[in-house]
Length: 369
Image 1 (cartoon, helix red, strand yellow):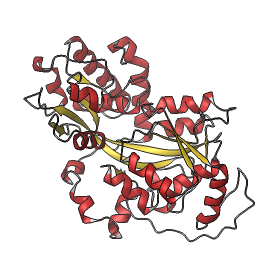
Image 2 (image 1 turned 45 degrees about the horizontal axis):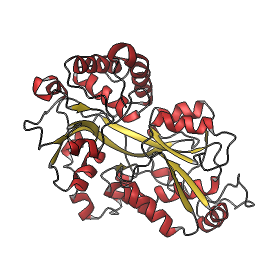
Image 3 (image 1 turned 180 degrees about the vertical axis):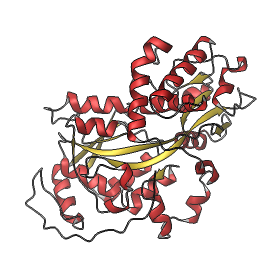
Image 4 (image 1 turned 90 degrees about the horizontal axis):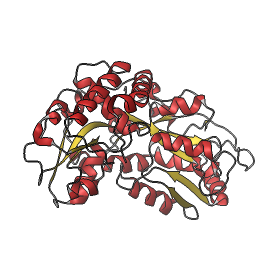
């Protein structure tokens, strides 16, 4: 992922009549706000408040843009569930139809190919790296993190440092994923990380090797087929969870030592996962969706994600411009934790996803609930 500053091109576009299909000048946020306020609502999906600081981000949006209600659907949904919510509500303008989605990188092109997305370029478009966005604005990177282990150290006394350690007998009934690997992007990429730790290249090979690893883990009795969350970690039901570092760091903060928790980045395979934002082609509130995008990619929105331990898409550009407060940077893991991170391409992620989703039942056979 080439996070670099790109010189923004100046553009001047006239504001058209207020309608669901209005194209706004990138600089006329007041007109966009008025149109969004007339719609009165924004419907989001799959945004847990402890994921990337989304709780504070949503609160910030509501405070800045009074008069727009944020309707939050299924915070624990996976990327596949988000696409299904669009498909299932194509003709529904009610509260179950999402306006916007936040999905794993491989799901962006898939949704675009299905015609599920509408294009929109935010004002800060040129500071989003070209290799992690659709050139026409159907989807674009929002943030990234690296795969890690969250560990309840009240229960686990010897910390695993890599995926291979998780096969040891001392971790029986201990290891979990954050969702069903057939639909959850985070779980799918956990398998990619596990596969890469076995020497596999990102893509089909990492998916197949990741399946082999989890089949071994399941056979050993170490895999717990329960959706891992901060609560299940704290209760000891899933004392080791493979998840994005930003989720685990947020859980650690919220648990505040009860129980104590450590976050470990696997030593052999530092896998970075990029997520992308997009607007539904069937959004009931398209102007509110565009205003939400403008907020997320503003300095305020990007810093909101960073405070939630996610590296936002404009991180390098904002850093070069001196826009990131020192106290925010000081709370992040050391830079060397990200220096060796591998950023799989869209094609790599799509191939890995196909291998994992297609082979989980036959190779691993565990029903994650």
